[in-house]
Image 1 (cartoon, rainbow, N blue to C red):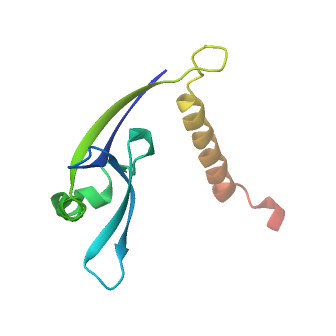
Image 2: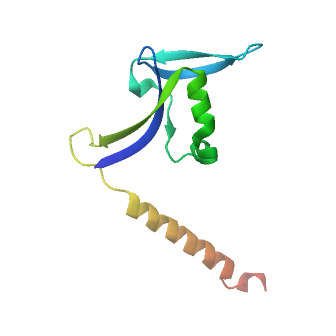
Length: 118
């Protein structure tokens, strides 16, 4: 089973390392950032997240500028397998079926006969 994700990381313009986390320095208009050379340890945001969508990503652009970093969009494809090397079962249809059944039972409960109350 293949899974594709698209997310954003910030990369330091001087070292090429990725921003792992950052914090505002109290009493000053500066940030402190922890860097990592491993992209899987970098702080991430999904491309379609609300923070990015608001104001055309201006707050993210301002943060990147304040941290001396650049915004990178990462497109990653994962191959999922079980421990024995088999493809895992796709649970999407089963989950949707269970949701539908639960909703039908809920409606039956709401619309059901009220014989017990009489």
